[in-house]
Length: 404
Image 1: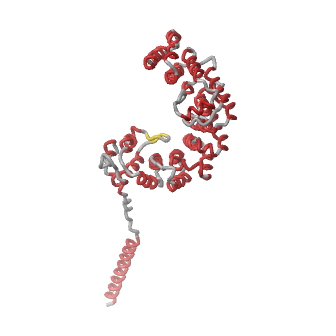
Image 2: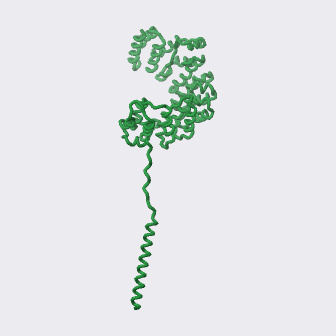
Image 3: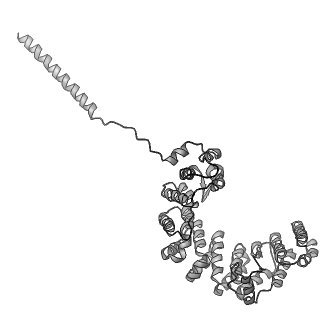
């Protein structure tokens, strides 16, 4: 009997142990966290549309159902496509960027400008710099649209990418003359390390209405005009310097024109001087000092392959039939068209000058001179020995024919 009781108790112990072991195993299984797959991101309508086409020229074209207009969703999908492009500084590489390659075709599709800007402002919040750049470059804000200007400026203040920042200037730039905060913001960026940001700053500070209302900007513009290492920055800044119509800058501009080592800046210095004495198309200001400096540059000898620079010779509207020009002529007594034609002719005949400068000289004589002025060049140019003289001879021949 005792033997049966012992066996019974042993069996119960084993069953209890097994039961406890099973419970522990069950609890262990229950304690393990359930691993769930991350939810698929919910795509917007524009993202779904972009995903439905191939990233090719023809594929991106298929985003648009109509050949005449586009919807906001289609436009958004088009801008989102830029995220797949490669960039080089502020440019989308065309061979790797189908949306950029078809941008002209897209620009012809109709979509209300305000609707476009709604999409653009939405995408300017994107974390993708390429999407922001594409959006900012398409931004179009009228000077009267103060709300849109304010939005553009708010995005500019928080933008870290210099190329996007520069592009945003088109949105608020027209408000700069009247807005102290914007003016200071732009002025501060005139010293940015990014060439494109400085270029944008120079461009926004150079209009007549800006420099006219804020003459204190002249010092900043002069620094960019005469010293900045970037040609485009110097170009825009020198435009602003010329529009300030302050004769005090003439000596500094002249000093650079007299330095052959700085020939790469001569075009920009010359443009600033011409703006001061001709002021096309307004004809509002006169500067004998600027005119004298410019003419001395044209007459400067010995000429070389870089002096005078070709583009420094190109001038708009030396002769105009309008009333503004006639009023200007009465004030600008220093200007004599025959003296200008004579300076051009001397450059055109000079074998020491570059062929490109001589070509522009002939263009200007053709534009503002007479057939007689052109024919007077025939003998010296026909007997010229400079390399490339054949191009000049042919050009002169055609100019004489066209002037008849």
